[in-house]
Image 1: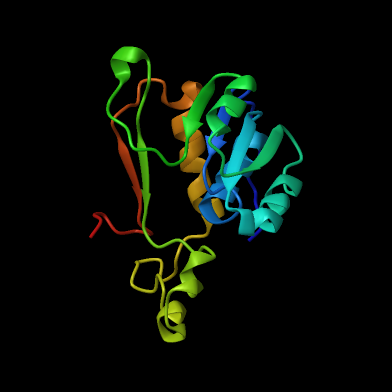
Image 2: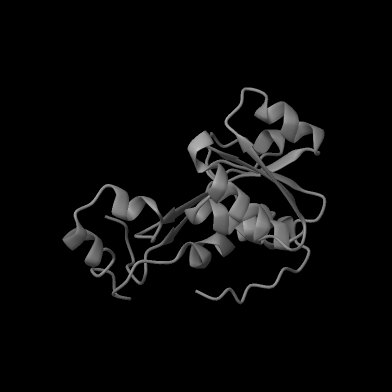
Length: 172
C-alpha cells in the first residue's frame, strides 16, 4: 500500500521508544513518527534484525535507531532526550504528573503475525467480517498514534481509547 502521509513537524524534539518496531503496526508508527521529526528508538527480537534494518531504511526524515531487546534500552533512549511516546504500555492515568495515557485499539490489522498462527482458510477470511470487508493495513492505523503523541493535536486528550474497527461501532 502506498503511503500518502506527509509529516508536518508535529513531533520535532520528541523521542519515541517503540517496542516491536521491526514490522507491522510498530514499523508503520516508527516511520510516521520519524516523518514527523521524532527521534525514534525501536526494539526487536534478535531474530528480527533484518526486518528492523528494513524499518530503519524506510525512514528518510527524522532519525531511527534499532536495538535488540536490552536492559539498557531505557537508559539509551534517555540519552536521546526525554521519552514522549510509547506505542505499547501498561499505564495508569498519570495526568497529575503531566503524563497523558491513551490507547489505540484496532480491529483486524494485517501484520506478519496473521499467517504465522492461523490456518490458510482463516487467513483468507481475516477481516472479512468488518463493514469494510478487509483488515486494516498497519499504515492505516499509524496516524492514530501520531495524533495521540502530538501535543498540537491532542494536548487535552487523556484516558481515551480510540477504536479503529473498519466501520464497526463497538468492539467485540
